Image (cartoon, rainbow, N blue to C red; front, side, top):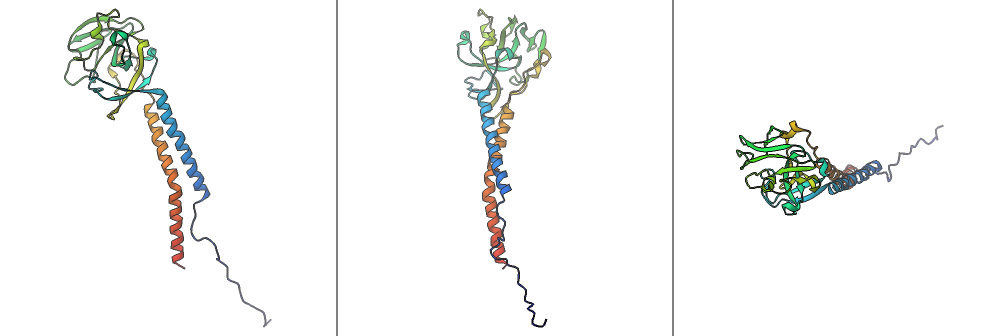
Length: 255
């Protein structure tokens, strides 16, 4: 009994790590964030690329909605889907066969005239046009009532005094109208300078439904969200390693 050895062995802390290292779960989440970010980023760009066409507007005929030199994105659409109030890009040989940007104010079957008290009338209804230059009438020169043939469009520039639009072609065989099939795209936004999406032409609502905005905002948010995820995922590794290094240094200092 008396010779019994009572010595106890202390627990070893030997080579155990004292600082946290980047966890596998964190690394996996980081990789997942980068992968998802790439899908969103590339998907947003691809969606916009197949949906929109870029144009530079050379004249001020659409001022103040679109100024000379502005760059716009126009959604590819079928001419059959164009509605009153849309700003469209079209080509017509009688107008010079170059891309032109104008606003559709009347479609097939409509009657359009101007200007009683400085206002445009479509099917006898006065159209409110807040997009026109401030303080100016709807049309500098009156034009008689025009009945738009089926399948065709009547177009005006927002700067009515200088725009060479349907009113400049009233004596043509088509009476100033343009075929729906001549439309290439519908302008959704001014991207340079960055003025954003065009205002909805609510003055035409009483005459029928308006076109729905295109997917540009959704595609833009996809690109932004993808960028944030890529940056956050890529930053995880260096940040976690730095935090682990500091933790190890702090643990070594208290021994």
